[in-house]
Image (cartoon, helix red, strand yellow):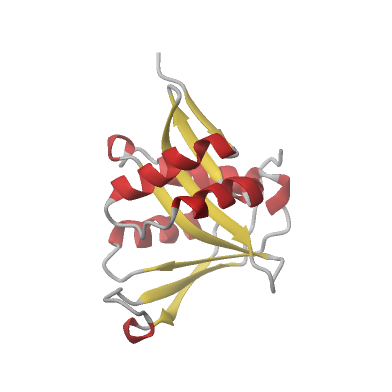
Length: 167
């Protein structure tokens, strides 16, 4: 019997998270150190999805340093074997059940124009919370030192968490 667990990451997850992000083929793969720091310093705003002791999903997020009512979702990674089953949505909903996110009124994330799956995910999240999703340009291609695609800023606001339990 398969058991899916959504939980806060721990340091022991860092290598598996790095491998998962690399496996997606669509996300920017950061240094392994970055994922260890997310597990250590931002565990209250990150989610690991574990299936039968294997990391199959990860959401990295943090509270915006200048706007404490804003959660910035940095990356959402789902193993190929779990795609299309609503895991990304489950992980994002899990975040908003946490006490750390009880005062969040805005969610921000950046998504490249070619990443249609992520765009659909965050538009669905806005619908789930009966709120709005505004999209503007955040980073232009020429601002990157490599051939990185531009990044669009998605702002979901205001959050209405009616019916969500905090833990």
